[in-house]
Length: 254
Image (cartoon, rainbow, N blue to C red; front, side, top):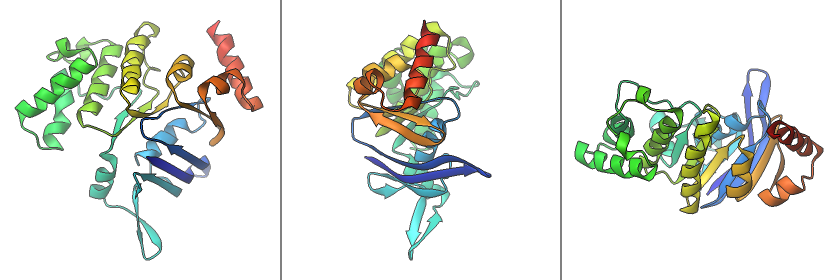
Protein backbone atom coordinates (compact mmCIF):
# COMPACT_ATOMS: atom_id res chain seq x y z
CA UNK A 1 0.00 0.00 0.00
CA UNK A 2 2.90 2.35 0.85
CA UNK A 3 6.39 1.84 -0.53
CA UNK A 4 9.35 3.90 0.65
CA UNK A 5 12.62 3.71 -1.25
CA UNK A 6 15.97 5.24 -0.27
CA UNK A 7 14.23 8.08 1.59
CA UNK A 8 16.54 10.88 2.67
CA UNK A 9 15.76 14.10 4.51
CA UNK A 10 18.10 16.86 5.65
CA UNK A 11 17.66 19.85 7.88
CA UNK A 12 20.52 22.10 6.84
CA UNK A 13 23.69 20.03 7.04
CA UNK A 14 22.11 17.37 9.30
CA UNK A 15 20.82 14.26 7.55
CA UNK A 16 17.85 13.05 9.57
CA UNK A 17 16.75 10.17 7.33
CA UNK A 18 19.57 8.19 5.78
CA UNK A 19 18.17 5.98 3.06
CA UNK A 20 14.98 4.43 4.48
CA UNK A 21 13.47 1.44 2.66
CA UNK A 22 10.11 0.23 3.97
CA UNK A 23 6.82 -1.24 2.77
CA UNK A 24 3.46 -1.07 4.55
CA UNK A 25 0.78 -3.51 3.46
CA UNK A 26 -2.98 -3.18 3.51
CA UNK A 27 -4.48 -3.76 7.00
CA UNK A 28 -1.00 -3.93 8.52
CA UNK A 29 -0.22 -2.27 11.84
CA UNK A 30 3.38 -1.11 11.77
CA UNK A 31 4.91 0.39 14.90
CA UNK A 32 8.09 2.45 14.79
CA UNK A 33 10.14 2.56 17.98
CA UNK A 34 13.50 4.04 18.86
CA UNK A 35 15.21 6.75 20.90
CA UNK A 36 14.29 10.42 20.62
CA UNK A 37 15.97 12.08 17.67
CA UNK A 38 16.21 8.90 15.63
CA UNK A 39 14.05 10.25 12.78
CA UNK A 40 10.79 8.44 13.58
CA UNK A 41 8.49 11.47 13.43
CA UNK A 42 10.29 12.89 10.40
CA UNK A 43 9.69 9.59 8.60
CA UNK A 44 5.99 9.68 9.44
CA UNK A 45 5.63 13.32 8.36
CA UNK A 46 7.53 12.64 5.14
CA UNK A 47 5.09 9.90 4.18
CA UNK A 48 2.23 12.41 4.19
CA UNK A 49 4.54 15.09 2.72
CA UNK A 50 4.18 17.32 5.76
CA UNK A 51 7.96 17.34 5.41
CA UNK A 52 9.30 17.50 1.86
CA UNK A 53 11.86 14.71 1.54
CA UNK A 54 15.05 15.43 -0.39
CA UNK A 55 15.80 12.13 -2.11
CA UNK A 56 14.13 8.81 -2.70
CA UNK A 57 10.42 8.23 -3.06
CA UNK A 58 7.19 7.56 -1.20
CA UNK A 59 4.44 5.92 -3.24
CA UNK A 60 0.92 5.38 -1.94
CA UNK A 61 -1.13 2.91 -3.96
CA UNK A 62 1.42 3.35 -6.78
CA UNK A 63 1.13 7.16 -6.79
CA UNK A 64 4.27 9.20 -6.05
CA UNK A 65 3.65 11.46 -3.05
CA UNK A 66 4.65 15.12 -3.24
CA UNK A 67 6.45 15.08 -6.59
CA UNK A 68 5.73 14.53 -10.28
CA UNK A 69 8.00 13.07 -12.93
CA UNK A 70 8.29 15.10 -16.14
CA UNK A 71 10.72 14.35 -18.98
CA UNK A 72 12.85 12.23 -16.69
CA UNK A 73 13.10 14.95 -14.04
CA UNK A 74 11.28 15.33 -10.74
CA UNK A 75 9.49 18.50 -9.69
CA UNK A 76 7.54 19.35 -6.56
CA UNK A 77 3.82 18.93 -7.13
CA UNK A 78 1.45 21.87 -6.79
CA UNK A 79 -0.35 22.41 -3.50
CA UNK A 80 -3.65 21.15 -4.89
CA UNK A 81 -1.94 17.95 -6.05
CA UNK A 82 -0.17 17.54 -2.71
CA UNK A 83 -3.46 17.95 -0.84
CA UNK A 84 -4.97 15.29 -3.10
CA UNK A 85 -2.00 13.03 -2.30
CA UNK A 86 -2.61 13.52 1.42
CA UNK A 87 -6.32 12.79 1.23
CA UNK A 88 -5.79 9.08 1.81
CA UNK A 89 -4.01 9.68 5.12
CA UNK A 90 -5.44 10.46 8.54
CA UNK A 91 -2.89 12.11 10.85
CA UNK A 92 -3.02 12.13 14.65
CA UNK A 93 -0.34 14.19 16.36
CA UNK A 94 1.14 14.29 19.83
CA UNK A 95 -0.55 17.58 20.71
CA UNK A 96 -4.17 17.21 19.49
CA UNK A 97 -4.28 20.49 17.46
CA UNK A 98 -7.96 21.09 18.19
CA UNK A 99 -9.50 24.51 17.55
CA UNK A 100 -10.24 25.92 21.02
CA UNK A 101 -13.06 28.19 19.81
CA UNK A 102 -14.98 25.29 18.26
CA UNK A 103 -17.05 22.62 19.94
CA UNK A 104 -16.09 18.96 19.72
CA UNK A 105 -18.63 18.44 16.94
CA UNK A 106 -17.39 21.48 15.05
CA UNK A 107 -13.79 20.27 15.32
CA UNK A 108 -14.76 16.92 13.82
CA UNK A 109 -16.98 18.30 11.05
CA UNK A 110 -15.08 21.42 9.94
CA UNK A 111 -12.96 19.61 7.33
CA UNK A 112 -15.99 17.69 6.09
CA UNK A 113 -17.79 20.97 5.42
CA UNK A 114 -14.85 22.96 4.05
CA UNK A 115 -12.82 20.32 2.19
CA UNK A 116 -15.56 17.89 1.16
CA UNK A 117 -18.28 20.58 0.95
CA UNK A 118 -20.83 18.50 2.86
CA UNK A 119 -23.94 20.14 4.30
CA UNK A 120 -24.22 20.61 8.05
CA UNK A 121 -26.70 17.75 8.57
CA UNK A 122 -24.63 15.20 6.63
CA UNK A 123 -21.38 16.32 8.25
CA UNK A 124 -22.86 16.11 11.74
CA UNK A 125 -24.26 12.64 11.06
CA UNK A 126 -20.75 11.47 10.18
CA UNK A 127 -19.41 13.39 13.18
CA UNK A 128 -21.78 11.63 15.57
CA UNK A 129 -20.81 8.24 14.14
CA UNK A 130 -17.10 8.94 14.59
CA UNK A 131 -17.50 10.38 18.10
CA UNK A 132 -19.54 7.34 19.06
CA UNK A 133 -16.82 5.12 17.60
CA UNK A 134 -14.19 6.64 19.91
CA UNK A 135 -16.56 6.69 22.90
CA UNK A 136 -17.15 10.42 23.42
CA UNK A 137 -20.42 11.15 21.64
CA UNK A 138 -21.81 12.53 24.92
CA UNK A 139 -19.23 15.35 24.78
CA UNK A 140 -20.13 16.62 21.29
CA UNK A 141 -21.28 20.05 22.53
CA UNK A 142 -18.31 20.66 24.82
CA UNK A 143 -15.21 22.70 24.01
CA UNK A 144 -11.64 21.35 24.14
CA UNK A 145 -10.84 23.14 27.40
CA UNK A 146 -13.59 21.10 29.06
CA UNK A 147 -12.00 17.78 28.11
CA UNK A 148 -9.21 15.66 29.55
CA UNK A 149 -6.12 15.01 27.48
CA UNK A 150 -7.31 11.52 26.60
CA UNK A 151 -10.67 12.86 25.47
CA UNK A 152 -8.97 15.51 23.32
CA UNK A 153 -6.87 12.88 21.62
CA UNK A 154 -9.95 10.78 20.94
CA UNK A 155 -11.57 13.84 19.33
CA UNK A 156 -8.47 14.17 17.16
CA UNK A 157 -8.81 10.51 16.13
CA UNK A 158 -12.51 11.01 15.36
CA UNK A 159 -11.67 14.07 13.25
CA UNK A 160 -9.16 12.07 11.22
CA UNK A 161 -11.52 9.11 10.80
CA UNK A 162 -14.35 11.36 9.62
CA UNK A 163 -12.42 12.03 6.40
CA UNK A 164 -12.49 8.28 5.59
CA UNK A 165 -8.71 7.79 5.32
CA UNK A 166 -7.26 4.57 3.94
CA UNK A 167 -4.22 4.81 6.23
CA UNK A 168 -3.92 6.24 9.75
CA UNK A 169 -0.60 7.78 10.80
CA UNK A 170 -0.08 8.25 14.55
CA UNK A 171 2.83 10.38 15.79
CA UNK A 172 3.40 9.47 19.46
CA UNK A 173 -0.32 9.92 20.23
CA UNK A 174 -0.03 9.15 23.96
CA UNK A 175 3.25 10.84 24.90
CA UNK A 176 1.57 14.08 26.00
CA UNK A 177 -0.98 12.29 28.20
CA UNK A 178 -0.99 11.56 31.90
CA UNK A 179 -0.31 7.83 32.46
CA UNK A 180 -3.88 7.22 33.66
CA UNK A 181 -5.27 8.50 30.32
CA UNK A 182 -3.04 6.52 27.98
CA UNK A 183 -5.18 3.38 28.09
CA UNK A 184 -8.33 4.99 26.72
CA UNK A 185 -6.51 6.20 23.60
CA UNK A 186 -4.70 2.90 23.06
CA UNK A 187 -8.05 1.09 23.36
CA UNK A 188 -9.41 3.10 20.41
CA UNK A 189 -6.29 2.34 18.39
CA UNK A 190 -6.57 -1.38 19.19
CA UNK A 191 -10.17 -1.30 17.99
CA UNK A 192 -9.11 0.29 14.69
CA UNK A 193 -6.44 -2.38 14.27
CA UNK A 194 -8.99 -5.14 14.87
CA UNK A 195 -11.23 -3.58 12.21
CA UNK A 196 -8.43 -3.83 9.65
CA UNK A 197 -7.34 -0.20 9.42
CA UNK A 198 -3.87 0.19 7.93
CA UNK A 199 -1.83 2.01 10.59
CA UNK A 200 1.67 3.33 11.10
CA UNK A 201 2.34 4.28 14.70
CA UNK A 202 5.38 6.08 16.09
CA UNK A 203 5.25 5.16 19.76
CA UNK A 204 7.07 4.74 23.06
CA UNK A 205 4.35 2.33 24.22
CA UNK A 206 6.25 -0.94 23.98
CA UNK A 207 3.31 -2.98 25.25
CA UNK A 208 1.09 -1.68 22.45
CA UNK A 209 3.79 -2.40 19.87
CA UNK A 210 4.33 -5.91 21.25
CA UNK A 211 0.66 -6.91 21.36
CA UNK A 212 -1.01 -4.98 18.51
CA UNK A 213 1.62 -4.48 15.80
CA UNK A 214 2.08 -6.87 12.90
CA UNK A 215 5.54 -5.43 12.30
CA UNK A 216 7.93 -3.48 14.54
CA UNK A 217 10.61 -1.20 13.11
CA UNK A 218 13.47 0.01 15.31
CA UNK A 219 15.14 3.22 14.15
CA UNK A 220 18.34 4.83 15.37
CA UNK A 221 20.26 7.79 13.95
CA UNK A 222 18.12 8.06 10.85
CA UNK A 223 18.32 4.42 9.83
CA UNK A 224 16.24 1.28 10.25
CA UNK A 225 18.38 -0.96 12.44
CA UNK A 226 15.97 -3.86 12.81
CA UNK A 227 12.54 -4.85 11.49
CA UNK A 228 10.39 -7.87 12.13
CA UNK A 229 7.63 -9.68 13.97
CA UNK A 230 7.06 -8.08 17.39
CA UNK A 231 7.38 -11.35 19.28
CA UNK A 232 10.80 -12.10 17.85
CA UNK A 233 11.90 -8.47 17.89
CA UNK A 234 11.24 -8.01 21.59
CA UNK A 235 12.21 -11.50 22.74
CA UNK A 236 15.33 -11.99 20.64
CA UNK A 237 16.69 -8.70 19.23
CA UNK A 238 19.51 -9.23 16.76
CA UNK A 239 21.34 -5.90 17.02
CA UNK A 240 23.24 -4.72 20.07
CA UNK A 241 21.63 -1.30 19.69
CA UNK A 242 18.10 -2.69 20.01
CA UNK A 243 19.18 -4.85 22.97
CA UNK A 244 20.53 -1.75 24.68
CA UNK A 245 17.36 0.22 23.93
CA UNK A 246 15.05 -2.50 25.28
CA UNK A 247 17.18 -3.02 28.38
CA UNK A 248 16.96 0.70 29.14
CA UNK A 249 13.17 0.63 28.64
CA UNK A 250 12.80 -2.39 30.94
CA UNK A 251 14.90 -0.76 33.67
CA UNK A 252 12.74 2.36 33.53
CA UNK A 253 9.58 0.25 33.68
CA UNK A 254 10.51 -1.42 36.95
